[in-house]
Image 1: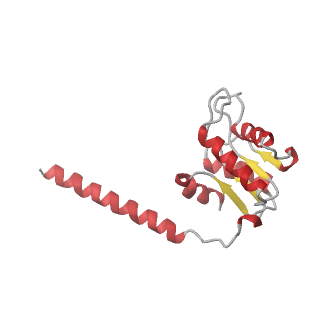
Image 2: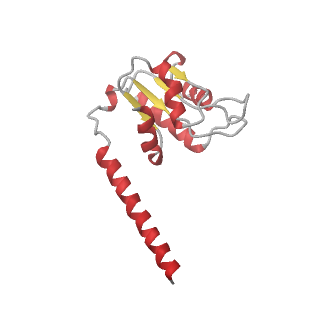
Image 3: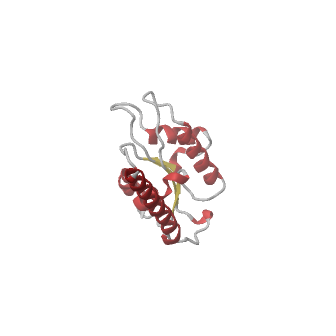
Length: 153
């Protein structure tokens, strides 16, 4: 009975810490007045792919969203991130850039990095290609926003 009480107390504490962290993040993340049509570049983060280069559904959705924003005039260029699923294989960044080109984005308006294997590496390896970009519009999934925000700020 004592062990059950301890487990319940631990679970309750973890729940409260999680709720606090989510609320704190929502309150502390700076609210940017940037309108979508004011970004310098749209950065689309990779979300995985198969070893043969087939993009996962979440990567496909992110590319489509980035291209929609681009066509809507949100920014004058697109940048894609993501390394290879297997050594020597195609990179997610290159596969996503190719898909964007097939969706009507001119190749000279697309850049990509192809070495990253994490969100932090997405930001670090993209930095040289994003020089001069002050306002970046990042395309990712909701669960990925906190990590993305921390990596790109």
